Length: 72
Picture 1: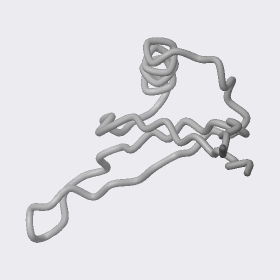
Picture 2: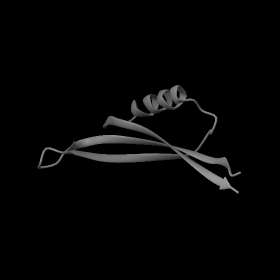
Picture 3: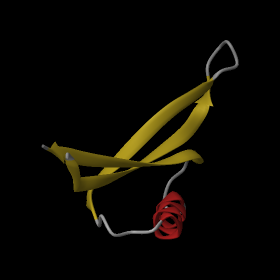
Picture 4: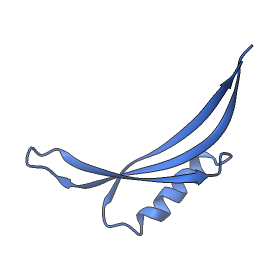
């Protein structure tokens, strides 16, 4: 039976940096590596809000990217 092992987690913040000529949002992202794997959804969201205060652009979305190794 195969098992999975959580190797790492990254926090990605996507910001809206304005609008293009077609009226679509211009999105920019910032990724933070070496984030604690044990973090909860609320903790990641609170960290994202704290970082957003330091930025000029509007927060568009927050993503958690987990990397998992599958062991046979």
